[in-house]
Length: 412
Image (tube, rainbow, N blue to C red; front, side):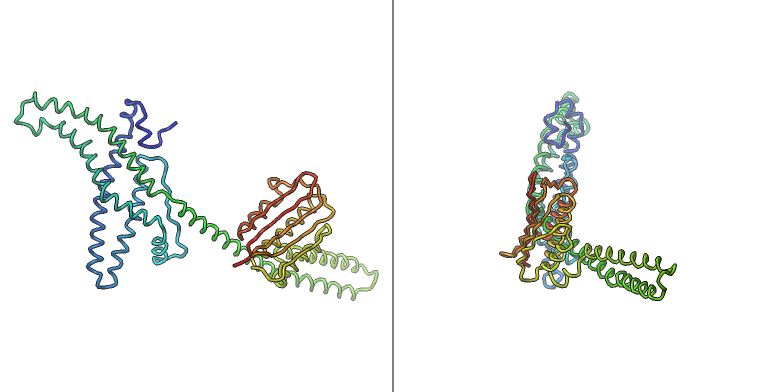
């Protein structure tokens, strides 16, 4: 199993550990930590000073905001530096602002707990950790190096005195490799504990993802309505006009004329195309759903279902548009599955609103055994319902009956 971080490297055999890159990576990490900490001290002091001097005018607030947000830069640098000694990348806990622009970015960052954790880490790094890093680097690298060059700067001492110190330098480096790597690993573990995303960061991203999915669903439904309107007002009207013109043309020809049969066939094809177009429009977005609501749309869908459908719809008001659309297509898709797969002779649809939730059941007396994994469209239904905060439950034992139970919150 490959070594993932500096602390794991300490468990390697001494010869393998000393010959690896981990001591050097650890030394580079601690050196960078010391430099980053000292730079943070100077930058923060400069920003605070600028804010204090300019506090008499409004722009002084920018200095204080920059001080707070300096932790974001430190956190980003630290996550980048940690790749030296920890091969498991630390993800960025920040989410993308809802709107473009500097103001939106500032408000988003100031509301995130990750920003304040990064500021706390920057302060701890500047106040404590960078000094320890500097001390460890000095003891591990500088002190043995001074022993190595003892004959150069101790010219007044005999060689018998300086030579043993020179020989101690490699031994010092070998011994120092272990505490350097150990402190680097411990320091990275502390940084990970502070900078790693928390559940609140994940929850914020989950909320944003849910909102984004809802916006996509809304945009999709708007596009469906546009397509339905274009088909209804454009292609359908032209087909109706074409059928009427063909009918008028039939009146102009005499019975038994060679032109009568082609006109009859053309008019029949126009009627078939018109019927298919109406079915297509109903599948894209039924106009009755927009005009009269869920109960009327479900009744219309039940009237066109291949099997008889019993209805018990106790919906006395219009529901939010997204809820009506999701519930309608649940009924349509489920009734289509009943006709295709269940061998049922009858189905039933019940719906009611209680406690701010829509409860919808679709039953059939078929053979059962419905499996969402076999491409029956149930997974798509669950995704559609989940986009509006609802849930779908399926009961379909072998031999039937099958029940699809849907609950959707319908309060704003």
